[in-house]
Image (cartoon, rainbow, N blue to C red; front, side):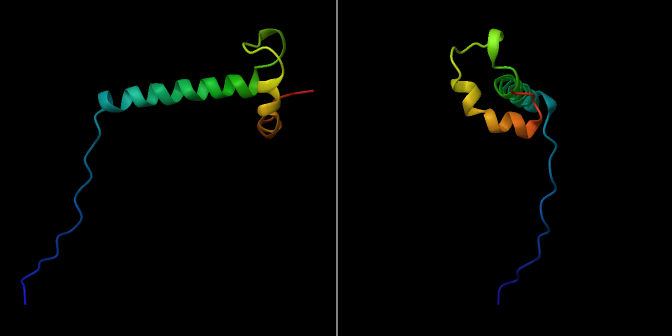
Length: 69
């Protein structure tokens, strides 16, 4: 038989903030863009002409409580 020893799981290492910060900023910008398209993209301030974006996110607007009609 082999002499196998139980090796406990490795301890977690801390992630430095300077490595995590760009991903946090990127995620925050994506969230702001998503909130803009779901909540604001309609009417006089719209970036995309027509009602295509509004109709695409219509159910999400109601789900999140944004006024729509």
